[in-house]
Amino acid sequence: MASLEQLKALVEPVVEDHGFELVRVALIEGPTLTLQIMLEDPATGQMKVDDCARVSRKISALLDEADPIESEYMLEVSSPGIDRPLTRLKDYDRWAGHLAKLELADTVALNGADRKRFQGPLLGTAGDDIRIEVEGIGEVRLPFAGIRTAKLLLTDRLIAETGTLLSEEGADDIEEEADEESSNETRN
Image (cartoon, rainbow, N blue to C red; front, side, top):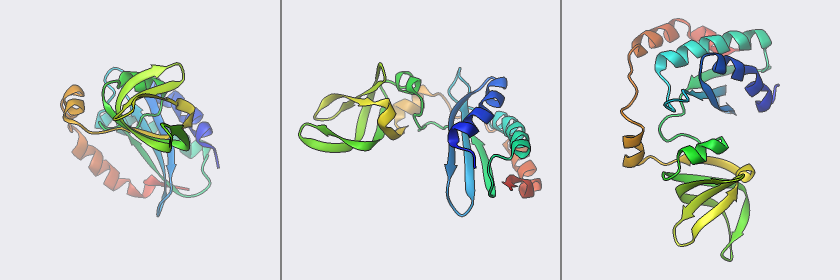
């Protein structure tokens, strides 16, 4: 089976050809393996439903041809959403000032205690370090390479600054199309 980096290298050109940026590629274990591909419009940080569907069809055709995953899987192409994962160094600068939750792969010693989970307002980056304000401690710098997971926390301010929720125009057409092609969603 292809690695996440190989899958990213495979799908990223398709995403970029459509004018979007790849946010995350993940394989999620469950009853059925899911290949999750998150993308965004670099101008807005969001995606419209019809854009996701259009890119999904192109990626699906590419994956059918390349066959990088040996077992059955579901393809999910989506927007990162408002409380998005933070996967790229630039995400921490773009969302500076907003609350985030970060978890490191390994613990770090901080004020006499070992910690791996942090929450607070993002302060941007300094080189390859993430800066976050932690209550009772102040500014903490964490190595970007050491972050296991990170995401924005949903707040009224975040909702207000990301604008109104995306239009669902065309969603009914996409749902009907998905129902008709449901047998094509699971890949071998």
